[in-house]
Image 1 (cartoon, rainbow, N blue to C red):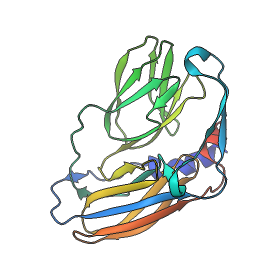
Image 2 (cartoon, one colour; image 1 turned 135 degrees about the vertical axis):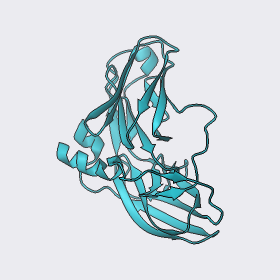
Image 3 (cartoon, one colour; image 1 turned 30 degrees about the vertical axis):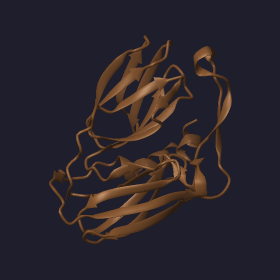
Image 4 (tube, helix red, strand yellow; image 1 turned 45 degrees about the horizontal axis):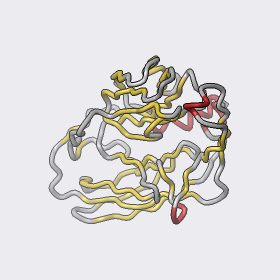
Length: 242
């Protein structure tokens, strides 16, 4: 079963064999669309084993968050193997993952390869542990509320983040080497702008369904619409891990 987990993440965990070149894109196009999921929404049982006053009660969490029009929130949509395009925008502050009420905020995010700040906003001990496949990327103990520790994600790929103290906590960080990666909104919509004209592979990934690949052609200064329907294929990474 564990081999299936690695296979499901392989599409988003492997580093490309080129260095991305960022430059202004004068004739770029835009890709817009919506990621949807049909069928019964699976749930994951959360059993709170400690720190209930901070962490809350036992509950059932959806493994796919489905909003209006069957749109999927928190899916990652990105273009594979883009060698040249727009530069990264400088963020207002370094990316963060926050331990808050014994959950990770945000649950899913994309960051450039580099630093991420791990924050504890709870009055309880957290141990934030990030993995790229089986390899530990960071393993940080945060015993005090208000602690902030920066760690480096030096390789691109999809990182699974857990708390060694509260075993139900789970998040995903996609470290990228090009800026053509976004997380879907609450209604499942996405927009990838300033894409150099050409043919690409668009990938939509969600933690329960895994990746879905779609070919897309971008024309100069035009908008291309791509809608993606996600379906479960095989055992999910969450089911296999637990």
